[in-house]
Length: 294
Ligand code: NLE
Ligand code: FE2
Image 1: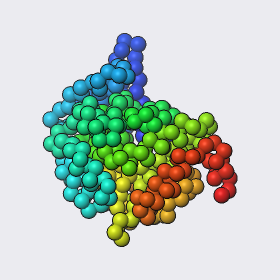
Image 2: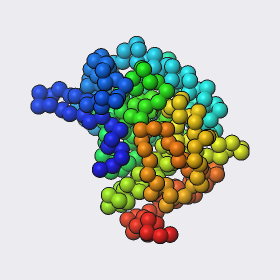
Image 3: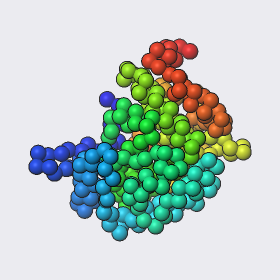
């Protein structure tokens, strides 16, 4: 149905209560029995979680903590070069641990006093309407597993590194948090799947993969670039296009590789003026009009 459906591994819950995450044969963890067992156990935590209860504690292996430590170290250096100021300042305020994977409850507790955002555990794909809709209430659905240790620099599949180093650091900025909230209100306002898909693509090309001009240099603010120390080295060489709602809402993308088409905001003000205002006011009719012509 949606592109997003393809990059999350399907999660199956059996009648006996056991949970299986179906990794594709191309997944780097496919042949790793220990990793697959961890994925199943972590998915079960989210499936058994009830709203309002604390996020279940996930046990991670030493190897998994080492993946976090490695990626954190690599990204910290690259963020200084490639991330926008707003992100760097927000990350400083959030103060994530660098040497171990934080528990999602811990991330949520660090974030809430800053911008009101709280984390919810997700076993895999959350339906788009639910994922975006609850942003309006300050909730962020997050996976809890970590990428396979054999490919630390990039994963097409959102993992806790992406959700936390990419999104939680961003959500620690009140300017960003407000953009996420208006995206959520937009998703709730529309009724058609086409309009929801359009909103989701604008989200993809901005809050997931957006780039921004800052003091003459091209920087990243999208969580998907900021969580990959492979992709973050490449975005400046991509096809960079001016920020445009219709173009973002209708351009196709391939989630399995580095994004080769990116949209550049000339400033944070422009991002708020163009994208924030779009989400704040769009509805089914206005989106249909944009797609049809103007
Ligand atoms: N490619 C990103 C990463 O490696 O962290 C994840 C993107 C999820 C949309
Ligand atoms: Fe994301």
